[in-house]
Structure formats: structure tokens, C-alpha cells
Length: 126
Image (cartoon, rainbow, N blue to C red; front, side, top):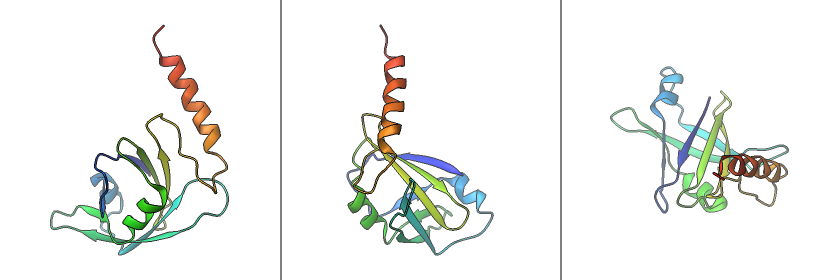
């Protein structure tokens, strides 16, 4: 399953996950999950605690702040989460240019950027 979120606040100590994702878990309530930057090759895994509120909403909690500090998503950035079914999310970070952010260990972000820029140019009115 994949979903995205848009960063609207400067920084948050936790990240809410969509209700449909929680439903997909079919009653399973993991205590921890792992996050990694999406892409080919080896990526650092970030351990993140999962918490639920009284309404059943699911949050990435302790450990989320460290992930945010490392990848620096800012206001207006898109984060695309891909769940592997085994308590791990691969996360893609897109900035306000609609391009995937490039990081030191990135090997495929520039290709995605060119793809999104070509779409953006095609959609620009003449």
C-alpha cells in the first residue's frame, strides 16, 4: 500500500497515518515500525514507535523526529510512503519543485526529477 502526506507544519514530533492504512492492517496494532529512504541499495533504517489514540488513529511517534531531522522535509513537501507488509515504510521526499529530494546516498532521485519536470513542462499553458 502507498499513500502520501503533505508537510503543512514546521515540524511535528509525530506523524498521523491514514485511516485506510490502519483498516488495511485489519486489527493488527504494531508497536514499532521502520522507516527508510526509498531507492536502490542499502539505506539506513529508522526505528519508530507506533502509538494509537482513543479514536483509533495511528501515529509514528518516538523516532519520527530523528527521521525528520535527517531528511529535513519542509512546508509544502510531499512524503510518499510505501508499506512493505513487514512493518517497514520506504519513504520518498518531494520538494516544492515537484522533484524528489536528493541525498548523499541517493542514486535514483535525479531521474525522477527529470520525469516530473517534463510533466510539469507539458502541463504549463502556452
